[in-house]
Length: 82
Image (cartoon, rainbow, N blue to C red):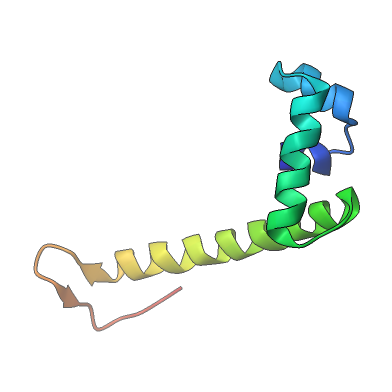
């Protein structure tokens, strides 16, 4: 739902894409706004961008750590790279 709002779709358009009612979209958005402490769709789009950037960075770090750590022996390699 957040991705669709970020694509500047209206509530009726989001509802059509997800096969739910407009009221369901509105209810979900109200809950999302409350949970994140935001008041508008534009704030939601900005929050989604920040969360996505954080997740992408975290995934890169996890992959780098996994690549440089021998999970079988449990020993770290001597060469760390990102």
